[in-house]
Structure formats: structure tokens, C-alpha cells
Length: 449
Image (tube, rainbow, N blue to C red; front, side, top):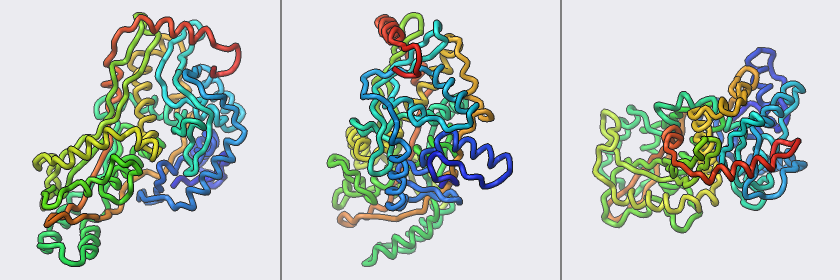
């Protein structure tokens, strides 16, 4: 987990420039508000991912509730507008005063998502707008809307997206948890010797865990030590455990993959599931000063791998009809799952912010607005908190016996291509009026309205 666990405090632990830079980042971003504990997972100093202790979650929730107790984030709004220029001004003031940013700024005034981006050349500004709520903390320590209970957008994730988006042009933003080729070879040899599971399935499962060893966590498109990386890993980790039946989804329409295999059915030992996003084409006005981002949905996809002595051959097995049905259920119930397990809503937030970053950078909206966003991109002047990098996950073998068939594991991943969505646009002349109305309501002071 991150070195600093106390919100709004940076502990003086060392005199080296590297440590001091990290301290400044943690202080600047409110001590990270405990952001190392995303999705109920913990990452230790060796990069090993696991579940966070329930008592630690209770402590985290209490700390966050105390930290945001005096926030005046306003009432819920169908379309709250946030001035990026004035957010930058607030960051500059915070740097000059060496004080942490107010939590209201850290959570972008309670925005739940960004549905509109308005370019305002007259005020040298970009306005981010969308539904918003009062800032609150749930029992698990998630920062959510007081009414909607949905996780709120975070300035920290927006900065990560803006800084990383150019590097994500080719490979996208992704996360995967996979066994090593050596581990696959060992577990294949182990199972070949077993011939049958036998009366003591747990003994075989423990043998599989030892043979397969830790699975490797891969994060691409964003820094591995960022909060956004933690969201990707946490969502992948949770999906994997739900698919394997190690955790209940909490949604009636989404059982585990293992439980869906029929008696006497056959299923590959390594079905893979991963999440991808889809968006409707982004609407724009003729002058490209108003944009609407809508129609976002998360989809679950699957393919089945073949495990052999030489490692895993991706997608080499035949189509698994049960895996396809589980994916259909995951896609259909995603919103319900996100309401039950907020990390899946956090994943959607990160996807939205990546698309907004690709839109701002790809369409040169800051240049069109004559807005200098250099401070937001400057890691020296505005360092971000750095968390332990996720590297591995301990293997947990699980299975259900259906007739003569044992189904033993499932793996997952996340894949996002934000540039693809930012490039798909359509014209909508009505947006100009929406922009004019939003900007007309701009107050003389304050950074949101």
C-alpha cells in the first residue's frame, strides 16, 4: 500500500528529493484521501495484490468521512459546470501556499461523469459538465454522491489521463492478470499426473496453486503507480473472483461462471473474460466548441485458451457457449453490478476521463480556448501521489463438479481504446445553444456552477 495513509498529512520520512517530491504530491492531493485502497484491494511493498482487511476498510471510511465533513459541494445537479481554468487557478494557489487542495476540487465539485465539454475562448476556458451530487463517503470508504451513491470523478485521475493519453494512442489502456508460461507448464504436468480429482478436491486445488504460482499483473497505457492503474487492477481482480465463484456478485442475474456449467458439460480450463467500453459517436456543434459524450456502455468479451507445456495459446480453444452466456449476463447486469460493487463504477469513471482527455488533446481544445493547461501536465510542478505498483496476484484454485466435469479457473482483463471513441463524431447544431446557456450562467467568482 502507499507509504502515506493519513488523509491531509504528509509525514516527513526522508530528506531525499524523491521522497520530498512524493510528500508534496500526497499533501497536494489531500494525502490521496486513502486512494491506495481502491476497490477493497491492498497492494503491499512487493506489489502483491490481495483483499483489504475489513477493519482497515472501516478505518478508511472513518478517516475519509472526517476529511470531507466540512465540504460545501452543493446540492445535486443535472448539469453542473466546472471551469478547468479556475481549477488550474486553485491548483496554483495551493502550490503557492503549500496547502492541500480542497476536497471539493479533488472531486471536481461532485461530478459523477462528464457528459458535455464546452470550449469558451472568451474566458480562455474549457468547461466540463455533467450530473453531480453532494460529496459523501459510504460504509466501505468509497467517496460517492450522497443521493446517487455512485463514485465521483477525481481530479487525480483526470490528470493521469491527460498526461498518459498520448502514450495510449497505440496500445490503449489495459490491465490483465495472467499465469506465467512456467506456471502453466507446471500445473499442466501436475494435472496430467492426477488423472482424476479424487475424493479430496482441496488437496488438488492446493497443489494447483503451488504449481501455477503467482499470476502476473500487467498494466498498460497509464503509469503502474497511479490510482487509475489501481482501479483497472481492482476491477479485473473482482471480475476474476466473481467468475470463479470466489465472491458473490450481489446481483441475482450474475452468478459465477463455474455455476453455469451444466452437469456433464465440457468446459476449457482457461476461459478468459475481459471488459471493453463502447460509446455512441461524440456529438459536436459545427464550430467544435460544444461536445456531448453519451451512450457509454461496458461489454464483457470472452475467448478460451489452451494450456500446454509451452504455455498458454490465446484463443486456441473452441468457443465456450457457457462463457459466452456468462459474458452476456455480465454485460446486461453491469450497471447493477456497478451499483453493488462501486469499483466497477470507478472503472467507468476512468474510461470516461480517458475519453475526455483524448478529446481535449486530439481536438486541441485547450489551444482553441487559448487555455494553458501546462501546469496540469507538469509532473515536476504538480507531482501526483505514487502508490505501490501492482505486480502479482496469488493463485487461488477453485472448482465445481458437474457430472464428471471439473471446471477449474477463469481469468480476466480490461481493455480501453479512448482515441477510437474521440475520433468517432457526429454533427449536432443544437449543441451551440446548450453551450451558450451553460456559459451564460458562469458566475463572477467560483469555479463551478
